[in-house]
Image (tube, rainbow, N blue to C red; front, side, top):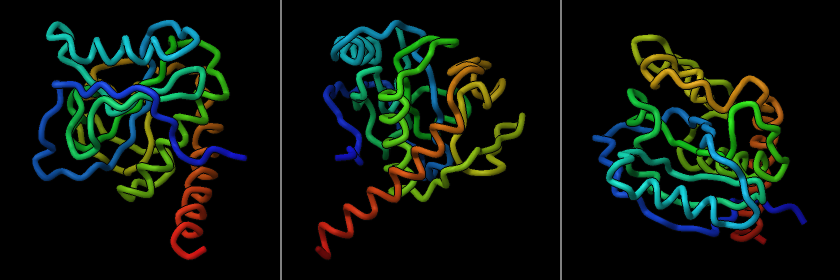
Length: 188
């Protein structure tokens, strides 16, 4: 059976979040943690500890790992501190791994499940988003951290070898599967 929804195995709420001040999420930003993936949940727990460390002053809404599990760090209603000038209008998904890594199918699938959930919940289209250099969202959708430029912190993650088309295709699939599961639950 296909798992339709994210599989959260770690919850460590970060204090490094703030109000969206009425802003609506328009973007889903895909990141790479720049850390190694180890079997089990210790990576997700360690990232949660970093997101609670006063020296870090960063956070993300969720993180996924190579095993296809995820962690929750910041509620959707709050602004996570993950992409500088776009924090207020975005939801962030970190992925345990390095730029240039070969991403596991399980991790890409788990990331796609989050994109599908957020697309349903917040009306963010599953398509390539677009921003300009002034920090304005031109087209809502899904972006790599590297797509945000200087206003997003000038990062290069998740890297040019990231399976972008596969991610978006899986997100479309999971969105439809989630809607079917929800309909069946209430109308079955």
